Image (cartoon, one colour):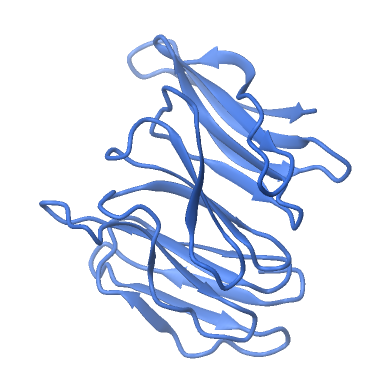
Length: 233
């Protein structure tokens, strides 16, 4: 749900993997559901920006891979229906991804797949414009969750998990403005056996907060898990 009250809900199932979504204007009821895809290869995710722009992402994958496989993005301005699929990473198959929508409707997508290398790829799009690759981050990225946030000025924070030997470290980078390069990746805390970013949020006035989960294994079945919050300057 966005700040004005625009909302989107999306769903699928393992038995019937079609992707469905329904949107609602502030103060109104949900519109009839749209079927966005006949078959998804992972669970769809919905995001609504502060200005009411909505988006849904999910992956498709076939055997063998096809050019139209990969992360799919559907967008809708406030009060509109979701548009057709935009292929974020054509041919990428099942893709780990997260996205942020600014109040003016710009979209930033961070994604990682097994086809385009162990780096975080960043795709940007102005409201109503096509996506384009903006950056590649990290050098040895683990196939775990990503977290992203962005504002109208193009300030963006992205968090991921970086391999460090047999361990992993939550890592993040900030872009100060539209068109500027991302700053150097910053490790967050100590290495863990597994590290997964959960949430990234820009802080008004500068910097960002990253929530991440770290796990250590102390035996065949024992696991210690902790949540940590780190602030970037």
